[in-house]
Image: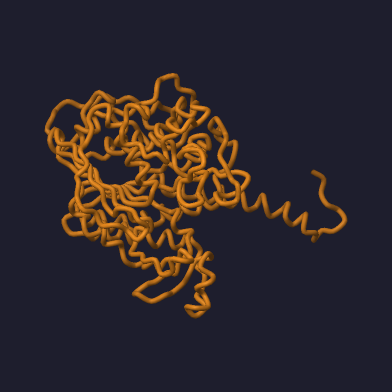
Length: 430
């Protein structure tokens, strides 16, 4: 492209200069977090043992046999997707836990090639998920998933992966129903292993109440963890935290019960609440995760591990979810084909910051905070979403939400999250 000679201050030239700078800043932000954080969290950078060996636990820690290593040090969260001829771990016919909204096979997603790729980390192979090993490692233990509908997506993926070995019984109770109509808690029990998996609906992780149903507006108490899950922290050995998407909804931020700021979507609330200052969403995400992790770190009796799962990018193209956007690609992006979006980089950075700021307190109290970084890998998978195939023709995901490029098909790329989670547990045994 030739430089614009006629007017050095022209808008076109300014845009041409600013756009590359913004991209470089986003990339620099990602690189900075990688450099400063990955060295402090080598737990996910190596395959510690072969899938045939037992995961160290209090029950077998006295064993003198050492596990056979399968790879030298490598970074499991950096790599690329490569073709895979093996069949998926499960299908919609073999796993009864798939929600219709992610049941892409049932509703006729036209190209099923999205299940024929596997994640290849730089410098090593990622072992395939071993259901028997995972269940044996979790014998007598409990694990909670806390977050939004993507936390449920992850939990259902894990249930399907484990279904080859065992299927749980759902513990039937009279659940508390959230204002959104969702059950606040669901529990699944593997009787032969004494293992419980629980799901807590808490899309903001902190205390929240819907202040205006018409506008879909929320009050978020950024300094108070959502007690619906936080009160049960000591009951679990592992807690997997996630959730960023709901922070885009109109929100007023509170601290000490007092309204202190709002996000950009809550402009209508600004005048009503005294012209509240706008707080960038990533800063609210950071505050909420810091509060949630701090609640875990401070909880008396919790000596387990909290796993923070990083943001997963959406892949709407040619519009957003409500303006005609869709995700029709049929293969993964190649690494380097596109840069991670600046918004996703900021969210991931906010999560990493929150973990860094609370790790010392957790360690002092006998807990451990771990990072499950799936952002880069999932950014390369625009082909793995339901699109229009999470419901019958003419149906919708929720309200007018017809096209889904946020959640993940089951089976699909999301199964990587549990493959990495297993390796994380291997590297950090109880």
